[in-house]
Image 1 (cartoon, one colour):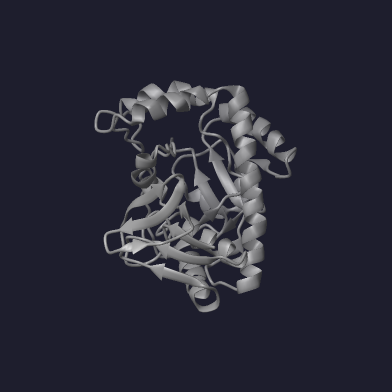
Image 2: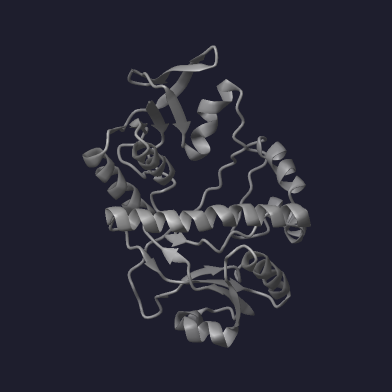
Length: 298
C-alpha cells in the first residue's frame, strides 16, 4: 500500500518509519524546506515519560480567571482574537473533574511508557545520534500545598508501572546542585530516575535520512498540502501547491495545522495550538545535568 504521511516532524517521520517497517511504500510531504522545521525544531529536549499529569484537573480551575485576564506573566490567552478557543475551553472545563483527570493521566502515561520502550528499541536498531541519554527528571514544586497532590498522582502512576519520588529541597539540591542557584526557594521536587533527554530535531533528521537510504520512503519538502480529494469514502489524491499525489491512504501529522486539511472533510481534531519559546545557551557554572521542569515560577 502507498501511504502519504502529511507532515515531516517527529510524529510524521516516526509514523513513516513504522509504516515502512510493515511493508508499505511511503511519501512524506511537508511545506517546510527541511524536516522538523516547526514544532519539532527547538523543543525542550525532554523525554518526560513520567510527567503525564493532566492539566485539566479540579485544582487548575481557580487559576483560569487570572490566566484569561493576563495576570500570569508567563501565559497570554487571546480569546478575542480567536473565538475558536471558547468551545475548546468549554471541553477543557468538562475534563476538570477528579475522575477524568485520573483517567487522562493514566491514558497518557500508558502511551508515554510505550513510547519509552519503542524509542529505546529504535535507537538500538538504527543507532541514531541525537544526544539521547537517561538524565532523570525533577519537577520543582513551588508550594508545600502542592506536595499532597503530587504524592497522590505518584501513587496512581506507581500502580501503572511508573516510579516517582518526592524529594525535599535539600535532597533535590544534593541530586542537582544547579537548583541551589535558583532565586526562588521551592518546597519540594518530584523525581523520576528513568526519564531521558534527546534532540527532537536531530532525531527526526537522522531517522528521515536513514529511511530514504534504507526503505521505500520518498520525502517531498517545500510542498504545501491544500486538500485531500475523497470521493465515495475513498482517498483519490492529495492536492498540493505543486501537483497531485496519488495514494491509497493518508495519515495527517500536521500538528496544529491539521485542522486546515481535516475540517473540510468534517473531521474535528480538537487541537488548539499553544505557542512556546525556547532559548539555547552555552554551558555555564550552573548548567543542570538532570532534566528540570520548574513549576515554582508559576
